[in-house]
Image 1 (cartoon, rainbow, N blue to C red):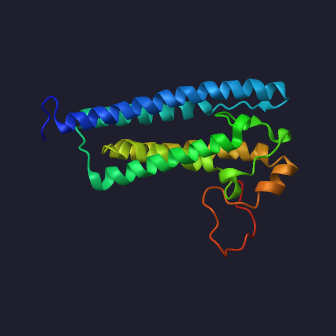
Image 2: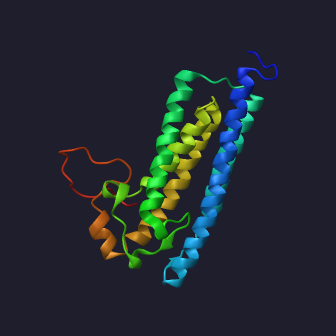
Image 3: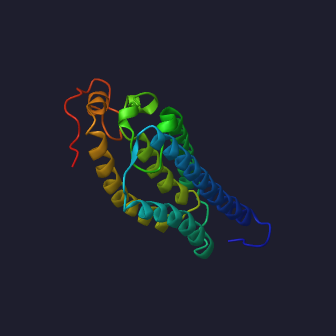
Length: 209
């Protein structure tokens, strides 16, 4: 592997580290937006729920970004186009879905669990088809991002940890949402993460617990 200064490998690693930094900066901006929404929602009577697991979610996102960078630098992971290009495409599509979610939820969007169903239920945008498009997008993003430059260990461990964190978060969020008759009527019949195939009967919603 050519690692001399200015080599294509060095440029690729630098670009990947820059991408990780950009994602981290975007996360900080989203936290600021979320706090602003929390203040507005609180003024309208919505309640921010206690969430002991939230620090684990923040730690996980941070660990994936840092871990991917360290693994690529220390492990000298190469860019493998057969994996990196599809991963980059998934990353872009996942972020497009996240942006769509944020635009659709508008002032309801939050990184915390806020009981805002009394202020209206959003069933437009990706919520036409699934209940939790944001969690689908974030999971795919954090899985694909390390794979762009071969940080396979970070991708696998991060995905496993993410599944555990999301299971806890979704249980809490659905417990709050399902308490609203308006939400149940608009959303409970929809799948959680994957749109229902055309022609498939709607049937009953997925188990909540």
